[in-house]
Image 1 (cartoon, rainbow, N blue to C red):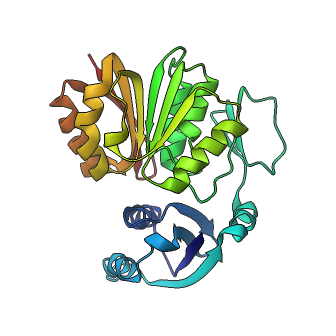
Image 2: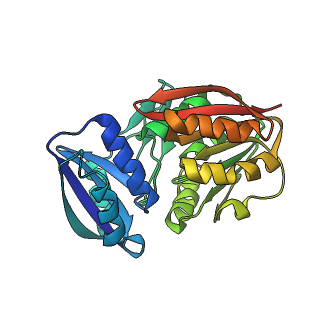
Length: 279
C-alpha cells in the first residue's frame, strides 16, 4: 500500500488552531499525525486521499492562517523508517509505559504496552488517547466486558486487558487499524481480544460493562443509540475525540435522552474526554 504524507508549515499558529485543523483532516481520512519543527505532518493511505477534499479543508482556514504544505508519496515499506524517526516512548500517569518495538523495555512501570502503529491512529501521544488511557488507569476494569470503538492501534483495549478485563471487542472501520490491532494484541500477549473491521453494525449484540469510543463528535452522535442498546445497567461509557464547546453539551444531551448520565470530563488543550454512566 502507498501512503500520502502532507507536511504543513505555518508562520504562526495557536495550539487550538492546529487541533482544529487536525480534527478536520481526520474527518477526510488522515489517520496519523506527527509534529515537525514548523508545524506537523499528516498521513493518509493513497486510496483514501483526495486533493479536492484537502483543498476544501485548507480553504476554510485561509482567512486566519498562512499555510504552506508539501505532498509526498511514501511506500509502505518506508513507513517504519518514518515512524522510528519520530516516535518517542510515552509515560501515562507514571503507571503505563508505551513504547514501539524498537525501544528498550522499562519494567519499573506497572503496565507496558508495545505498539507497532503501521499507519494506524492511536499511540497515546494524541491528547484524546492520553485522556482515555488516564480514565482506564483510574477505573476498575477487572472482570469487565469491554467494547473499544474506533480502536486504531488497539491501545485502549490492550491497556484494559492488562488491567484484568475479562473480554474485549475492538472495532475500527479502517482495515489497516483492524490488522494493526490484531498484531499489537499479539505483541502484548493479549489472547482474549476480538477485533473486527466495520462500524456500529459490527457491534455484537450482547452487553458490555464498559464502552470506549475515541472517534469524533458526528460519529459519536450517530452511534450513541447503538451504544445505549448494548451497555449494561450500571455500565460506563468513556468518550473522546471532540471539544468542550459545543461538542460536550451535544453529546451529553444525546446520552441523557437515553438515560445515560454525564459524570465528569477531562481536558487537555482544546480536546475533551468524558465519562457517562447508565443507571
